Length: 611
Image (tube, rainbow, N blue to C red; front, side, top):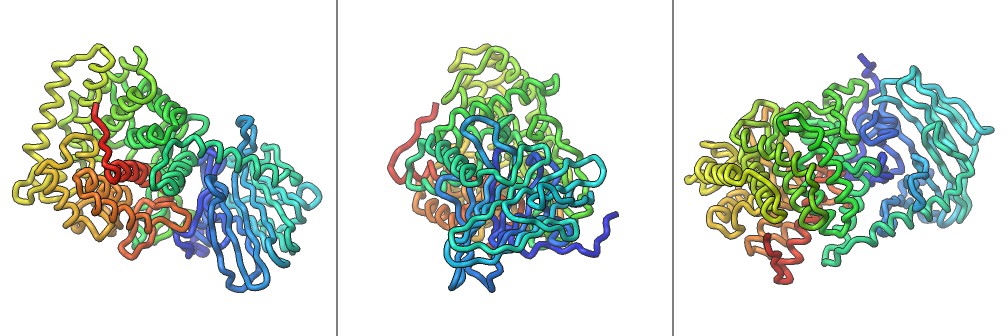
């Protein structure tokens, strides 16, 4: 077991970070200039910096001025994922620009982090310390000089992790196997640090200004492809830029979040690993990308999903989640060398990979249907794989499962899972009819209608006048907000309106919406979590669809205030406003995009036809 003497939970709040990346990996940079979290070389690889989890042992890459209590502002260069952290004092101003290079010429940009330091005003004294900790802080390393003192090579012990090289435009020293520099910059002077694998084509004379210009141009060209011109353009584009960061340029998958181990409760519990691609996010991702005009990204993602469907089990079933490359995620284990942000060390891998979650099939079919509607037609072979999976749903829809919330204390009959099984049958039927595709229509129609009756007869609580999480219970579940969003029920249906009222009454702390009725041991886990950010956006959209546009808009606008200073959202928000859970989370930003589109329609009096 790792020595615990130096374990120190990170004092920097989750929300005090921006994120950079290159569609291969990402890094989180705090407002104090510390790069506190990074997995390398891939987003689901082991950490090389993990101070966000353990400030004492996790490792960080810190660049900051020697000001006393400077004012700090952090922002993105407009319509890019280039992060700027500005430090301001009465007699000097400097800024750190963080990015991962991208090239418009193709994939030839090195997989590295560039940190540029500029003196904007006055003379600035700076300190840089690069302190990597390999393999979730489980592996030591040796630092040696390279390139006449302008580079440092970090050689991990053993053969598990690849060596790193830090190149610099200024002289570097080594202290306790960390790279260190103390230097002064006159006004308008710049220093540059580049960190990447020893195998990457890195050089201390890398033209950082040219790399910055090329990366800015790459992001702005991508952002310009968006067709969204609504009233919420700034927040929608920031969400789109994040989704692009969380996507794999090589494979097309979109991970749920770039982090693991960030607790979902103020007490430090529920520390899951979200660096994988969940099938259920497919419908949201495809919808969002197509609505924004990114048909290429939608196509890449749909093809990734289709390949999972092609390789699924012989009965048509497939996994809840996959690694970025489509392989099975690792088994869940404890990263004991890291303390975690709470009282327990974080988990890596995810045990939910082995659960049965029937709702993912509805997400899959909604994605296939939407892409056929707005993208390209499904192939003959692809339809054979889809048919096999829909037949699996038809045979298993009424079985207990672990559901969207991935309960770890047993399977049960769940409203959201039944709802999404209905979606799977409904979208398959619609697609088959529109494209004149062969299908067992009588069987699929009969199963779809049985699911509908089951939901209305067994998940409706007449005393509460609400749909409930499980038959015969009094537990409300915010995933019911998907019912009108997937067009299972009319947004002004009497049963739905009373359910909407019940959710607003019992699951909200304005504007936060909790996932399900709080208290007790419903999910078998310790601690009481915060409001689930995606649910708040679903609630705002459901209100708008119900004709309560002013209420929905107010919830949406209040939720915009819960983003951090650069427009990013964590998975959850505590009642006191603190960010909880892995950060930033794709599902939250997907829900934001959907709600923004609905509010634009509602406020302009437009209604999209359903076909």
